[in-house]
Length: 120
Image (cartoon, rainbow, N blue to C red; front, side, top):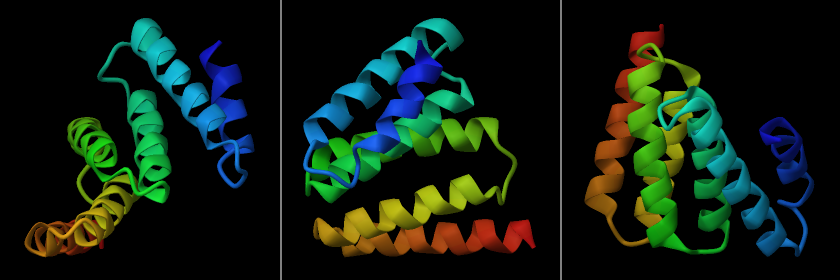
């Protein structure tokens, strides 16, 4: 079921059906957490998709929660310098800047740069 829903979510992001996309992502997240556990890398991928969706809707608080959880999980399960960690840090920094937290945004950008240096 999770794989089927994982394939449905990307159908909607660029359409007005954002509520349908959110429902698909939330259902996918719940299914993955039940079947694989809350610390599985696939869970982080769905958290990231939810964060991006909320960010596009200017729903900064839930987007921030999703980014925080996604980042913690990715840092726990992926090697330093992994592109998914860097991507999460960069987009989280954009969210923080857009929501008026420029100091925290700068910290996230620095962390992203440090991760990039580790990857090289």
